[in-house]
Length: 464
Ligand code: PLP
Image (tube, rainbow, N blue to C red; front, side):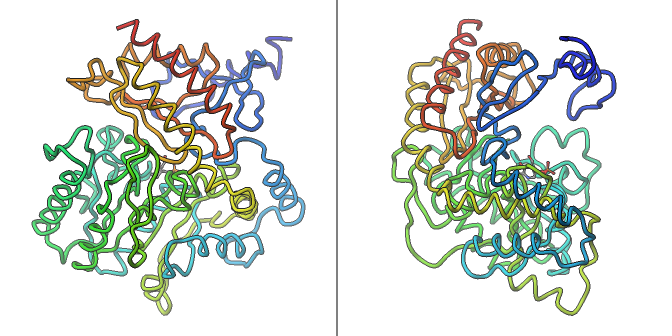
């Protein structure tokens, strides 16, 4: 029956009546009812399959229902489905080892597990403050770090505004964003140099001896996938070293292969070749952050899990004094079993390399073509399975399709409706749409989805 108990219509009715949803007014919602999924496809309430270009919230590295991860969770649930965090358990020990072994350089030692990204940020900041004995934390405008008090105050987008009661010691700076340069730069090199100069001055004027940490998404994700220009992350490392500031790389969205690398901060030692999506190593010593926060792709979001990767220096700070923090579900066995299997699949199926290849050979070139044929795609940027399209009214003026680039607009509403009708799940934020599929999406599926996106964007252009 189409409307009885357990039916999609009943699910939607109950959702509208009883579920309080994030980030939006409760009236006027029209939720997509998901009834099943497989690989990169999600079934709606009418039994129709939609191609997932969103990775949901950019976390399904393996798509849906990967049998190895499902089996690992099932087996863990049947043997030791839960345990308090103070006990040692195989899935947690193994997950920590696998994560430490994949961190850049050889400085990382341990993992503090959390339930997701925001609490990873909270705890990383707390570690940095205790380690340095300082309070202030720098973060960039155009960033998202999560929805707990410290994380939302560090956030550099409109989601902070209604939540901002002036968290102690948070200072925002501008990062590189060549398409809408805060520095009037006309090249990537100029943008990089000026962004670093601005950061240097911010540190100088805030007082280096008061700054505990600098929190930076290695590639800002929801804020627009602004891949940092070559040299920027090395410059950040140098400034942090010079002033004893802890560099916290937020890899909640960019980590675990999303960028075609285990962690996007590896780009610190690479430079773009000029081919969209292609970067090559530049040599020199490995540049690594002091703390890395992760969540999402660590286990494809099959069970909530996040954490902080801790380098030796900071781990040493807590050898003989307690870290004053903990969570009931820290390193939950189900989340960790999913992480072990997920990392195993990413490794064995060479999906990090596949994400990089998809970016260079399929998604990048197809999106560049789409942008050339469209009157409203102002810029395409990204790498791996991590791409953004800037949507504008006019390619010369670069006026965004939503005022200020935040919120929504009738034009972005046309895009969302067209995608839904065509059977594509997009990731839309402000005046951008992101192409952030699973790392194991097939080449044909990726091309098919970009074809649907082109159709949807043509409808938007016609509506203006
Ligand atoms: N940091 C980044 C870069 C994110 O993209 C997100 C979520 O989108 C978070 C932190 C917060 O993670 P969570 O929603 O798991 O708390």
